[in-house]
Image 1 (cartoon, rainbow, N blue to C red):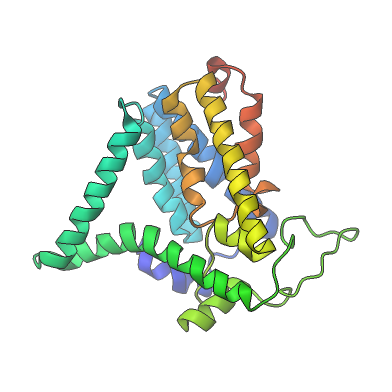
Image 2: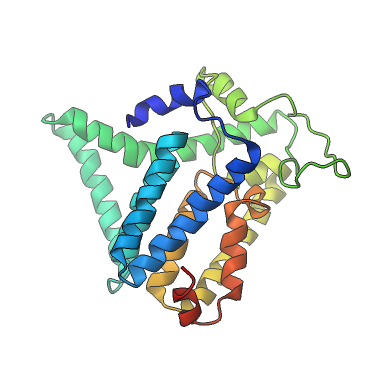
Amino acid sequence: LNIYDVYELRASGTFEIGKYMGYILSWVAMFYMPFVIAQSANKKRFVIMGLASFVLFVIYLYTGQKTYLFSIFVCVICSLLSTITDFYYKFYKWFCTGIAALTGLVAFVPILNKIWTEIYSLIVRRTLIVPANLKFVHYDYFTNHPKFGLYGVIPQAKIISIPDYYRNIRYPFDIGRIYFDAPNMSSDTGALAEGYMRFGFPGILFVFLLIALIIIQIDRIQDKTNYSLAVSLFILPIYSLAESQLISSMILGFWMFWIIVPLFIHNKDELENSI
């Protein structure tokens, strides 16, 4: 339960699972459970929403991946609050005010300073500062190393074999070793860094194009259903782009489902009955 112990536990191999089970776990944790939470909140089925949140919590306990723990709060809070009028503007105002207040508490209020610092570390440093810093680190690393290309996107098979400079090098740990002197630290980051990692600057433009197409897809879902449900469904996958890859996730990853499944939704009743 101590989120600060997960790095040591991951390094120990406690959370190792098979390749194909890893796919299934990602689909359940990053697509099906958030999908159920959004649907349940929209239809006010709070028992089902609670059960889905509990499943995500169990997955976090098994894997030690803090993303699954944070996804509970992101999905539940946004699903419940997205029904508020002008939710986008109010959420932006609340978020900015909260971050400023939390920063002020850490800097100027010595009482309970340790608690404020821990909260600041989780909310501000971990979700905003660290992902931004890692993007610059990835740029530097892949400027001085070969680009990743399509490796890891197309499943390896006897017919398809992509030459891979990194076949025996786990680059996230190599980055952790070089830049942070932490060989057990997996320094992976989001979609824009993945674009540069694979194809350089054209890759960044390609990722922006994919994100634009995703936004169009979200807008179509909103037209078919309602604003609240569209926000609830896509808040987690959009948020995950700050720390997870997009191109590799579109083939056998959770983004494959977020893109394909809504294409078969033609009206609100179909989406509401899909739990």
